Length: 89
Image (cartoon, rainbow, N blue to C red):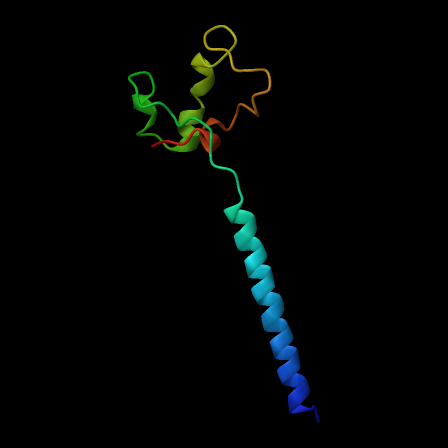
């Protein structure tokens, strides 16, 4: 037979661990940097992509965003997921 006092101590310990864990996650998210990536422009060139789904619209990004037309910086992340960062407004 277990001691009721021991069960209460375990429960209190688990609750404290849970609260500390939740607090740590909250602080981590609170300290996260602001989003700095420019959204998908809402102009005549990009208007047609607002009605499409993300994956469908991303198929057309490289038609213009390529070294010959609109070159991307060399340190630009992978180019196949444009709307993951450049969100539609």
